[in-house]
Structures are given as structure tokens and as C-alpha cells.
Amino acid sequence: MAGSENMVILMGNLGKDPEVHTTGSGNMIVNLSVATTKSWRDRDSGERRERTEWHRVVIYSDGLAKVADKYLHKGSKVYLQGSLQTRKWTDNNGQDRYSTEIVLQPYDGKLIMLDGQNAQRTGGSKAEASAPANGDLDGEIPF
Image (tube, rainbow, N blue to C red; front, top):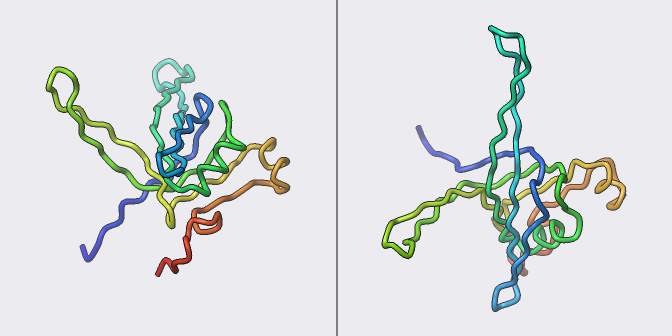
């Protein structure tokens, strides 16, 4: 294999309102809890079954963070594109802990709001935001 790519595409619903934090330097960080649900019919019983997975999403892009803060809320349907990152930390008992998150960074993160409510607020059938389109270039060209 010549190369590889760490890219995650996720479409789901927010399980709670976005959690917005501001760093000491004034940058916004937004945490999202996104649910994806798979449905199927049980072969034996014919009953409808469903399984929900929860995903941790962190937005480090100021432009996307502002959009998420302003327009997203519990239940919002979103399309997200980012990368997987695993963080390691040590808890109070000295045990190593790990957390894997979907991270939307400046330049390559993508957020599309799929709700009718959000689309009406932003003037289209769906509202799309990507990091470069929302002022995260800081005067640099990303190539």
C-alpha cells in the first residue's frame, strides 16, 4: 500500500447540546455526543431490532465551532468528516486510560447540518461548513 488516510465520515444525531469551551488564548473547542443507529429485522423472529452507537466528537476548528455553537442542539442531524485520534491519560489510581474521538481540525474538518430547522435558519436545503470556508486559514494557503 502506497499510503494511508485517517478519515472518518459520520452521520447521526446529537444526543445532547454541544459543550463549548474556550481556551486561554480565546480559541473555541466544542464537544459533541453523536448517536448512530442501525436497524434490521431479526431473521428468526421477524422482529425489528436496533443498535445505537455513541461517538465522541471534538471540534478544534474555530469556524466550525462557531457554527456548532450557534446552530446545533440536542437531536440535530449532522454529517461530520474528521479523523480518529486516541488520547491517553493516567487516572487518579495510576491506571492508563484511553479515549478515541473523531476530531475536526482546521483545514480538513467538515460539518453539514442536515436538519430542516437549521437549513431554514441558514437559508438553504442543508447548511454546510468546512474549516477553510469559516475563516480558519489565518492568512495561510493550505497547500
